Length: 324
Image (cartoon, rainbow, N blue to C red):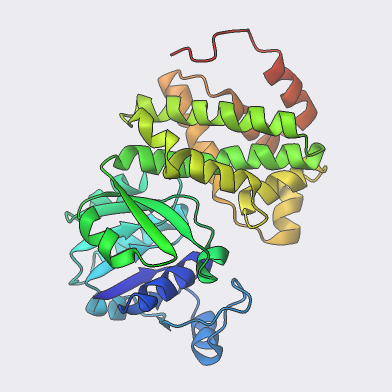
């Protein structure tokens, strides 16, 4: 099949290599013309060390649309709307959209599937799970979940000896889990920066899962999704991995840097710092208690001392572990 990918970062490039390994034709769109030309010339990208870029890249959206039977989204969530709005102006041949991006749009508080539906009335699916691009590019065994339309087709297209795809019908749950685990990874990174305490991090990750599930169920997600690859699986790897940008951002905050300092010195793009704004705003409108998300928000945007946040979380009113 001919598959076009929007986004030439580490995940877009790695996913393109996977598809080519599976004998598909791939074209990747990148926003910056200079970057596209350099990657096409060298077959290397600074986002993935010692990995050959097997796909051709283009800076022309029209070329992607003329090429693609399936369109893959692999760009930061906050930029998806503008790109889709531009694409909707043209004729296109793709009949399925597969989303790899994880987050919630700040301004509208919408998930990616909801943004897509504003512009395209075609089948949609979302792929998520513990799948750092760096390891997929090295063909390290990885398992993920795909939810939505044509999941049987996507399982066959994507699965191989190093990439196993499970199926789900819970688009809401997979999208919410993928978005919120980035917020929780920032919290885990803050603990790493403060001292890397095992007891604290295990407790945080467990309660993070509960918070993710509570938020998801409010929006109609299925509880079991959060105990699968898109939920606890992705939460574990994002809170623990050296490749996790969200965890790394939190670690730098925990070591005493402000968010402005982190962004100024590292050019780090971590989806969780956007998602937490949407989550906190949304939870306020629905009157849902999201204590970990709220503390991450206050630390990042209100300059709250992480140690104070930790103490306040510990001093919250005592309750049953599995209250609803």
